[in-house]
Length: 109
Image (tube, rainbow, N blue to C red; front, side, top):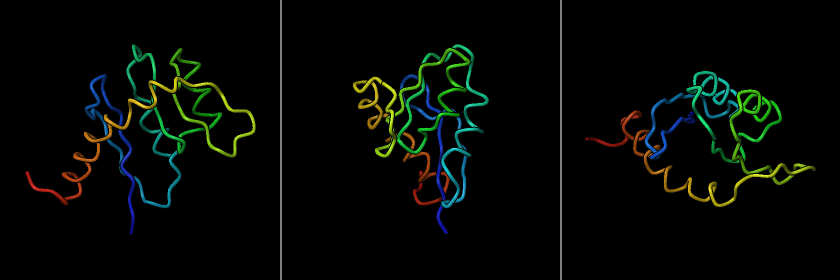
């Protein structure tokens, strides 16, 4: 059985909220739970292609939050995103991977 760990990180890349879903569950489900509770002062959200949906982008736009989400390759009209900001995200993911190892017991402190 697989699982996915979805995370909301602060400005320094540290996870502040985690949500675990089954591996076969769409990334949209994890995003709905986490994005519902992000602070109002949030200016931008960085997400990978798994979170590229009109519904997620619309939800963020309604809250005046910039979506920096890489568009899926099969998307016909590709929305713009800040490529440089998006490329910074992999360095932030190391904190999420560490939290995932600790949460699932695959790493000891």
